[in-house]
Length: 342
Image (cartoon, rainbow, N blue to C red):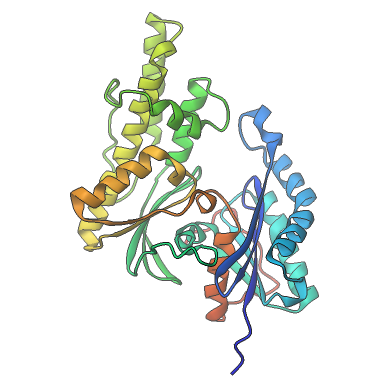
């Protein structure tokens, strides 16, 4: 039998991070993320600028990734890439490059759903790390700037969305609130930073009453905006010295909404293995609140290291490895898709 190693190159270009990673039999050898600072002065991601930056960065990032993994491109077994969801211009750069490399090296092309890859980030690790990993089946709360989902995971290749946001994502709510408060971009981490020193019960906000296991954050954003406007009529400098309390109250409310539905999902499915994924899983308040459920509800809780929470190619390469083992390859006719459900 041939036991030669399987090297997968992962390419992630769904938004404003150009990232590449190499895995050997599912173990991360290298994971390089080039962030795009061009968006900071605009207070948000500009799709056209993101696409151009990907074009400039993708070749140097891939070269650096192969070098860090200490392999050549000719040793690669397959190319995994983010097909979607994401910004179309950004996805096109990664998809086109992956196709070209697949043709040039005559190796399989593996399309990956970005949101499923976030779930699989719970299995991303370097040699010798041996972090605890969730057993199947488990529930994963995937929280990012563009998505909020509760996913039932029965195997690496079998996942089902049990609930998702019907409008805005939790991460987008954090960022919009930061903008209302004139906090610097990116706003979510700034809200988290100020929340650490605030009173989470200083301000009260309504909880949306949404059917089943779905979420909604648009009404909450409106309620927060009205609160800011009302307070500024009395005190034009609001939030001023109350900034920490206001951020703590907003963060507490968002986390409470997230975990209430997750608790409901756990009871309905009788699954107590609970994982976290996505960019907002870097939020310290969410991590603390979720870990506290180990005590109160007896959950087994799994949270990826920060490196694998935000958009990164290691999760693409790891998921690509399991698809490679199952011979789930893509044709060269495949095209990216900005909206990509599963």
